[in-house]
Image (cartoon, rainbow, N blue to C red):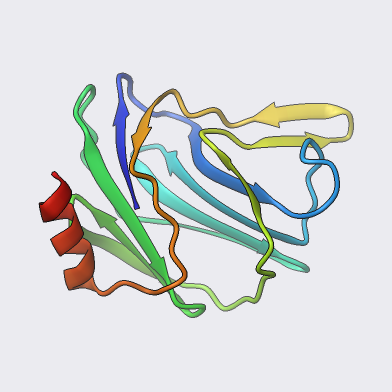
Length: 149
């Protein structure tokens, strides 16, 4: 969950939370990664677990420049649910396994591949970013949104 604000239209990938495992953080290891991004007006959830990588997105969300909005994602190892300002904005199935060790990068994700560094930088503000080890219900997400708006 997080409160997010941006002052521009997001037309590419802007990483809110990126992860990598083991080794040098500047080098991409496709073993067990987790990511949350905004991509072309949608929320994206990415999981890469050897040997598969999966990326799913929400329905379009109405981002208004310079206004705070709340996003949340739940994942129960079978399904992903996306929320925007307390309301559901899509579901998707993901069937994969991944490790439990993440060194997360907030606001960007740097990947070095073949001598080239790719950075998916988030250009905006984040507040109250939370990552939990329990799957919240739809009403939990709505209650949290209403309590913190």
